[in-house]
Image (cartoon, rainbow, N blue to C red):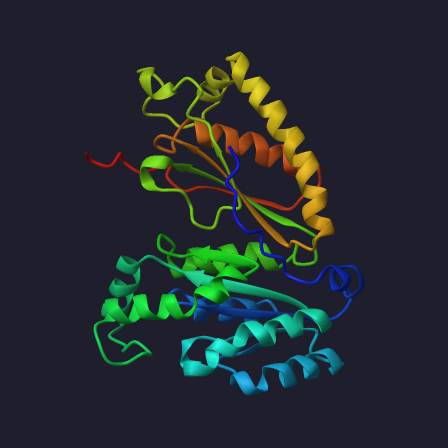
Amino acid sequence: MAKRRRAPVPIEETAAKGLGARPELFIITGVSGSGKGTVLKTLEDLGYYAVDNLPMALLETFARLVTESATIRRAAIVVDIREGDLISKFPEIYARLRLTLRTCLLFLDADDEALVRRFSETRRPHPLGAGSVLSNVQAERKQLEAIRDMADQVIVTSDLSSPQLRKMIGEAFSATSDASLRIAVVSFGFRHGVPPESDLVWDVRFLPNPNYVPEFKPLSGKNARVARYIRGFAQTGEFLKLTEEMLDFLLPHYVAEGKAYLTIAFGCTGGRHRSVMMAEEIAHYLQDAGYPVRISHRDIDKEPKSK
């Protein structure tokens, strides 16, 4: 079942068709403590001209300079709550930027528990100052809701270490950064929650569960015997066929509309067997079709949550 949600568009359709050769501007935003600095540093290492905390009043001027520059081909900037009340003007400014420059808006988020822990570990104050870290995080998230809704890509870093986040960004924006559509295929367990960054979600809990086969229980869907067991049911082949046909239909339309990133998620109960096998199958199918694909299995090593 596909999850229905507003699909963010990174650039206007006219820009998508005509500005492919122009410089790219990456705008990184999100809640404090979510890893914006790590992403900015990673992009800088990949050759992007990097600026942290650019004043909102200079954003359009900076974008124009990037467009006109003979030496800066790609730039990345961080814009966040440190702007204070001026952050509310960002959606209007960004809408204008998309008409003249090939842009990408990355929004980083993490759950409250992870953010509070990170502030405690670094002993740095929250930018909003007064109040507890938790109350500040919640207030900040509310102020950034409109920006999150218009983001081209939302990256949730709750379970990512800095090296893992750097690796993810490096894979997404290095060799394949000029591809028309980059795809992430994710497996997960519903008992651990649906990945919030998902654009399309398929529920594969209708398939027979290898978890109830003693010899398969300690294995995962990446194991050849487990995968063969799941593929042995008629409904598996039919589901794969229908899913591939649906993606064959959807992906060219996403490309035509200028969508740059797509996250496809497959979920089963625990995220260890059926969803893993399905994610692997679809990822390989999309790779064979020529799309740059990154695959991850979020819950493959997690223990079931206690009731």
